Length: 71
Image (tube, rainbow, N blue to C red; front, side, top):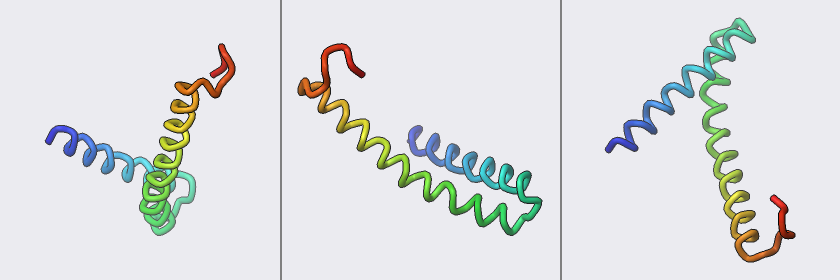
């Protein structure tokens, strides 16, 4: 329950920040709302791809695919 609440409040905060920044840059509430609603949605997919790439890199590292002392 705590994790669900934390996720929901983070989501709300993300929307507010995105809309506020978009408004500050554009001066248009229509543009700010459009950007503020689309950006978090796109960011969710970008984060998923990012996490998969990191998981793949960590798995490769555990298997010894990276040179000693490398990332």
